[in-house]
Length: 127
Image (cartoon, rainbow, N blue to C red):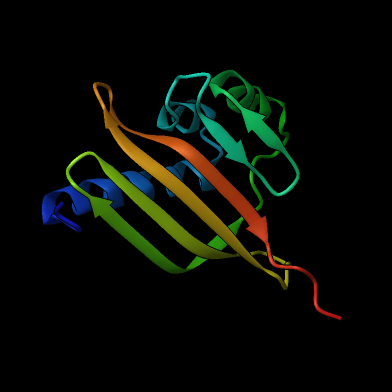
């Protein structure tokens, strides 16, 4: 297996960057399009467990104001073969002391690169 094929890695990195832009701009249509349209897709958030594309898109539509503004920290993107990769990043929300973490699993589909699994969490508060 080829790890970090330059072309595949560039594709996933570009998709990840477009996702981040859509997140910050609260572009719901674009955010929805990044996820694989399947009941098998899942997203674990800071306060929610979403199973299936429909649950993910419903969450976005019901969320007023979108995601809190943030800046990214360390980001590691890795491709495996030509059709699969992961993106993991740390982030800092405006006004939040805790570091956030985001993981995405990306798969190349007939419709382009899509997220099939995502996880967002915040570090525990320190006393």
